[in-house]
Image (tube, rainbow, N blue to C red; front, side, top):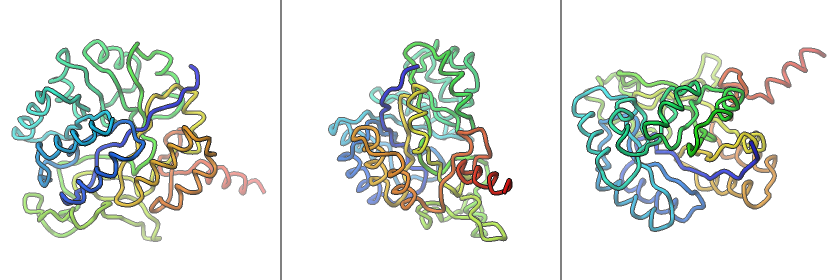
Length: 311
């Protein structure tokens, strides 16, 4: 594998923002150097501020700005109405889809090319080869897998299949049939009163020691720390990764895009970039999964602790 310059992608918004905020955000994204943009609701079907026509309007705006647009699907399908909505998206006739649930993979297989999101459990080359035969054109490495696993999979990657990694953003750790945000307000899921709108970056949980631990985002549980692989960029390039995904946050997303783009195209040092991004990152960074460690760890901090223990 030879070092290459990856493209930048912007993942779907994982939070519940109001309609005006979403439109304003993507008007700025259209002017950014990001190459690929994923659109749509992936967390909760009750989040209906944005209609399909709204997403398609934004898609047209982004396409006119030269972006590749992908429509993302729900990650947890629980009801017939959600399956019907999924079928409608699969039949949109214009935009490729990111399948975040195997129901979407099943609907798209042998009919059109598709992308698998980080929630699809691709853990071995056999799965990659099987899906490639049925239309897979790009896969996103599951967030819990390490660089060693990716290296093995890259060595057996089917021809014409692209690899994308979750490069920056709070990690989507789990999905549940229950809504933890509603429960935190003593509300039932069916009458949640859309409390997610109050938390633009989710609801932060801390330990008894007041350390950031997790983030509640409706039915999704995220890491409190933000996955940040900028210090590992040179290694990622050598592994032949095609696309680096940035997950949107309510503040400074465009700044982060510009910093990473400068590393890729303007010879900005990863050390300078890491310092700048850290100042824009809420509750600190982590890169443990990438290094085969606990996901919430930062390898540099982990190493410094080991060294301190030897003194």
